[in-house]
Structure formats: structure tokens, C-alpha cells
Length: 142
Image 1 (cartoon, rainbow, N blue to C red):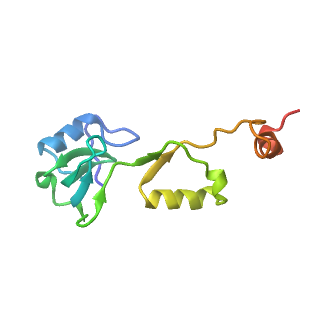
Image 2 (cartoon, helix red, strand yellow; image 1 turned 90 degrees about the horizontal axis):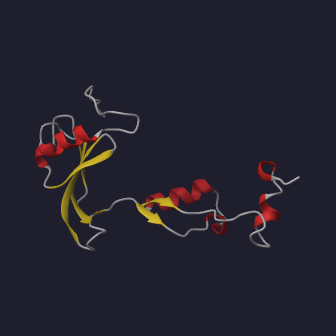
Image 3 (tube, rainbow, N blue to C red; image 1 turned 90 degrees about the vertical axis):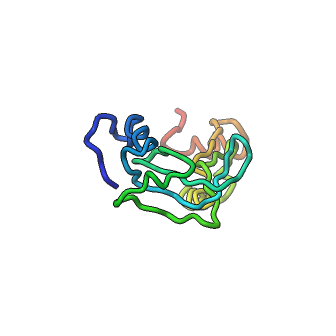
């Protein structure tokens, strides 16, 4: 992935200025996901659209052929769905009986990029909570 010396780049990727430049066609995208079926999670519609990415952020959605440069990586997503990262708002990894690495791999392969988990506190349930959590060094009570 190319870097840009202009102001706007930071630790997490492209700043807004460079994203606008990509969207306007002034700068090529680093990555274009083309020919996919884009799932619009706001409208519930699915339609053909491309996605242009600069750094680690989306710069443009739609017909983004203008954003492809000599060094742009183009991924053909024909026959695939393109979605934003999905969120599992209520999740219990502990109940899966798998370690975090296995659970993360399973979730990521299916598009889930964030979960809310671990709403347990010591003593919150007889089979978890104090008996499981507080027997460890990290949160043992005196």
C-alpha cells in the first residue's frame, strides 16, 4: 500500500482530505473491490456497486473505475456480497467452549468484526462470576 506525504495521514490510515481526493478522482485508490453485490444496511437493499479504499478507510462507493490507478489492487467480488463489518450485539464467547482465537476466526470469516461480550462480574452468577473469575490472580479478592 502506498503512503502519501501530505497532511492527513495518521496512525490509523488516511485522513479525510485524501479520501475526498480519491472520491473526486484526483488520487488513485489503494484498493478497489469491484463487481460485488453491495448490502446497504441502512436501506436493506442489495445492488451492484464498487468500493474504493484509501489506507484503511472507504473513500467512495458506486462506479469507482475512475479511482483505479497503476498501483491500485483490484479485487473481483463478482458473485459475492460486500458488507460493512457486522456487529454481534449480544454474544457469549465463554459458552462456545472455544478459545478466543477460534471464535474470532469463525466470526471474521462470516463478516462479524465486533462483538459485545463479557458482561460478567464477580458474583453475577453461581456457575461463573466469582467462582470462575476470582479464582485467577488477575482479579482475586483478598
